[in-house]
Image (tube, rainbow, N blue to C red; front, side):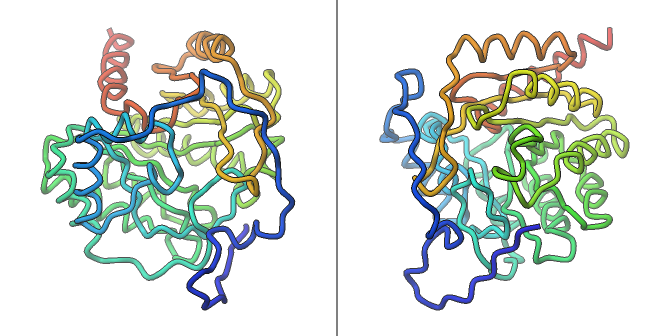
Length: 318
């Protein structure tokens, strides 16, 4: 496990201190199919104001999501709880790394209030990794779910969690709060973990998703990977098989984009027709829903996808 401890008191501390001394990694120029519009709509501004006025963080901003303009214009945002600083140092991620602050006990209520103000029918809650906490933040997730249920009874809730590695009993706490969708991303294929996701363990993440179904089969499970990190096609197909062995319902596949030159380089931009091929293969393997495209991200179109998930489950039950 990689835990970054911040001993720097300089207010100009770099966002990724563990990457400062790494050599620059050059990625190839972005192809036309990867480009998006700059966010400048009224809906985007309104969403941003609601997020800021409630003192919240979003993964949309912290991770530099390319779909932020589209999603925020529709008043869709993925709230990131437990602060803006992660205890892991993944090579692909733009979220700040270091020693996080103490949890904000008022945050669950603030998230619920923002959900109500935005009028969300479906809300997505994610978090930084909190290896510094005894339960990895599981109870904070549960409190946030309960606060949203109380404030917005008709809102469906999707969570995107860390792996709770070596946090005995943490998963059970989160599942007991009964989110509608439990998402945990594998991020990449097993052979790339040491360089891309060194603080995680591939088969632990598979087992986490499998355990959710064992604890509560009614909860939809979801996972995603990025491509363009040096993986081979047969490895992606093996990930599909591993996820289906854990009864995962929903798979997302998107293009990795390099946040800075200190992050892992893009090894290849996967063309749209290859994403379409991955989608077809994944459906043959039994996923209820598959989203595979260059700009696919875990929470993109989450509300619409939840409706599709319910319809697909109902169709298979007939």
